[in-house]
Image 1 (cartoon, chains in turn green, blue):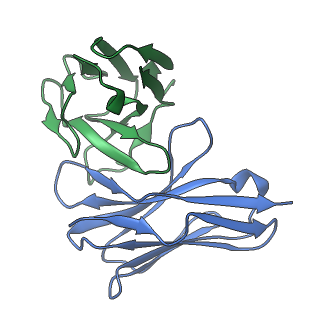
Image 2 (cartoon, rainbow over the protein chains, first blue to last red):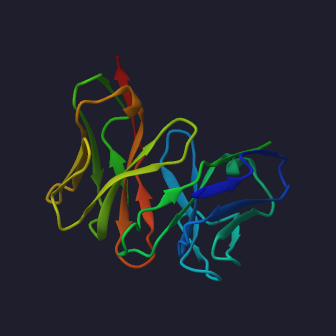
Length: 115
Length: 113
């Protein structure tokens, strides 16, 4: 199993450009999450999904949109990138809370720079 | 407000010694507390968790202690090895069905040979 994979690994954008980050998991997990990590800080939740076709806002959702059209994929979109969105983005997935193996499994991250 | 924080940004230990990484939290409405390890250039990796109604849990070379009276969480690593060098994050999982985590800022563990 590949676990959680993220595409791309690195990206440089100009202010105002748009892009989509792709997260895929092959563990049949119901729940998926998008976080951002800024230097010297912990992870902050952007958006999450508790099942196919559902999404919800996290702690820092402004400037981002998400979609969960397929159970195994969770897309994070930036419609008009800003320098404040320069960060490392992590995707995670998990089983439903309360079930065995409900800890979150993280992908390797996408390093995004907005100029 | 809600916050999960670590007491020290960097901890340096000698190889073979025991390490203790501390974390303070302010939100009592959580059902699990979790420790993650993040190596350079990688995503966080689950180490161990503890349910809020427990005060101690042991894993392989790791022990997590939870003191709800003073809202304090610690991770003890026995016989620290060079491969343990990483950033360690505590996180709390909010009660309910969302699985949402609140992360602390992280402590860097440096293991000296």
